[in-house]
Image 1 (cartoon, helix red, strand yellow):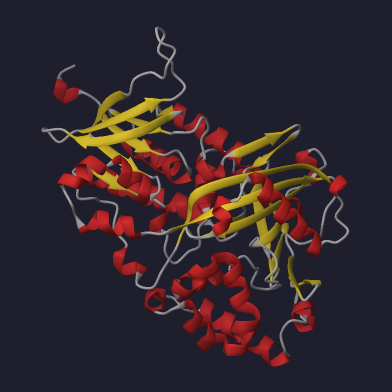
Image 2: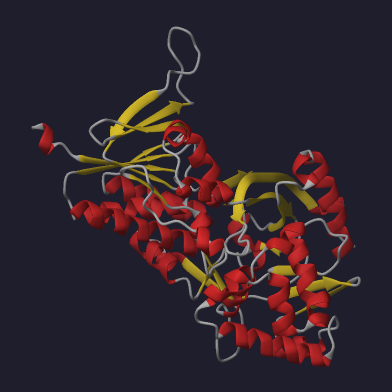
Length: 464
């Protein structure tokens, strides 16, 4: 085979849902042509924030995930990897905790009885949600602070009683810098989970959780000839004189036979490279190139601020409530909400036990980022007992803390103006990651859709 007949090589850095979706679409687009796709993942497992965790006979998602009926790209992905028939839907309920009360917010009657806002406030809330759901082009919301927009839409009193506590819980002090587009996307996504007729909220999951999805994705990609390399941390990416891209990666699971130390960094050459990792990771990897080739594209990537997460995962011997999500209006509680996954997932799928997530999203200056796991567990479980005073230590069979530094990109005012496209100033290098999710909350439907869109653009550029 001559050099001109050599297979085209494409590298994807990061095997989260965006990277896997991108790889699948590129493999389909190659349609049997001579294209070799390689996916590099620094961890020993696929999935990133969607990876699975196991304890005894419990195996479920490391973080909480659901599928909504409106998640068309995600459902199409599940179909392509052969697990859409394992998608199970369940009607869900929502709770609110405030002023020492835990109440339902799951039906029209619950709404009428809701004790935390007045009758007039309920009218303003319903009207505001309907009005916001009818906004088709939220670009103008990018220029408005969330406080200003919510006060205009719902009134000052309702903002103080409902929205401000929820935003404080979700964003901390960063809420004052956030654009209205963020909360609009949240309202729009959750409103879409309700059936238009009965206004009942329905959410879904794949039996076996994301382990089922990731195992199926791996089988599908392997069948299409995609190479998946785990425990391969990409340390640098550079250009060659002939327009190729060199990827240097450290195989952290390999040892040098003579020294017993980590094996040396490997290098491979590709025609195109696609980053799906967080902005800061990309900038670190491309540091040498950026220093000699500065560009506003890289400056905009560097300006993206992420919220970190510390998420307590509990395995209980009994349920806490009938609510999938309990929203919190009490300032004393250190976490964002209470998510009871086994109000969607049948307990039989996890050994008859019950799964609870207590997430806390934090900007980079939050003191809780430095808390030890022991302090996080103590603080969170003590606070959970305020919401559920009948919770006993004996009810908690297992507890753990999961952390990620770069999770939710913070959509500040004028974020849209700084949002770059997939094509970077570096030849044959592309970027697609969660910082590009706009007009939507952070979720796997948006991540899968972005990966597919980027792959289509890369394939189109290549064929052109």
